[in-house]
Image 1: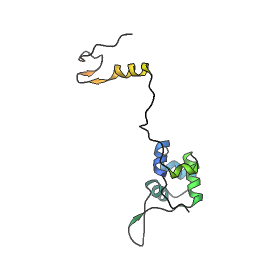
Image 2 (image 1 turned 45 degrees about the vertical axis):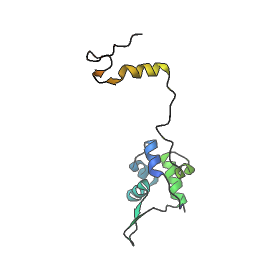
Image 3 (image 1 turned 90 degrees about the vertical axis):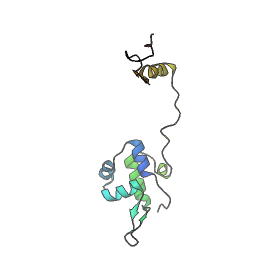
Image 4 (image 1 turned 180 degrees about the vertical axis):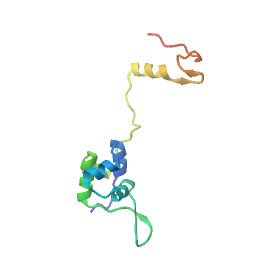
Length: 117
């Protein structure tokens, strides 16, 4: 049984997969999927929240439902704010829509002159 943290909720969010989709694909209980998504469950004996302890088989089924390899769940998904290469034409297009204090660039209220090609 896995004893380390699994990043099920983070991977579901990263892949755009809803809890209801995982429930449908895995036929697991919605409450259990919610516990795994949030990575916490209520210990009925102590009344305290604790980490769930899914079986390897459950982890494999969930990974398949999310569309990733099982081992990926043991690490967080890649950061979505990673640096991206941007072409000069994209930068120019972004500058055209840049919001300035007076409104959108190119608006009559804007102090910046519209970009010409």
